[in-house]
Image (tube, rainbow, N blue to C red; front, top):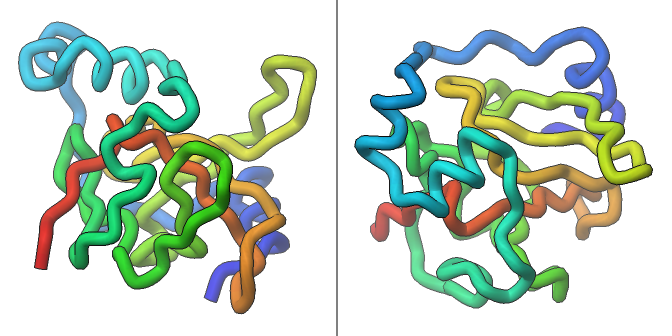
Length: 148
């Protein structure tokens, strides 16, 4: 199971390679995404707290990348963080997310992107529940729930 030390190592030295890569032009992404999905996943915008479709969602299934359909998070590891964004304790696979040191907005954080298509997902923090201690704070518009 991933922990904060793993995340810092990946942010500083690279994440394990994904199973596949999906690359499209900006025009191709704009064709398949809504305006808000494009802003969040391709331009690293953040949706307003509490506004996302999956903030309070409790349906069973997998949360896939809205851009490339890569499975990212499972509903069994989703939890209520009180932050206003869907929160998870771990990705489905060690190489599902990519980790990037983010020094924007006067703080140091770790950005998470889809490791398959580079879509901005959100950020990961070391203040989540056991057993991982991680809180993946993810934009709803970066995800698509595949119900099981």
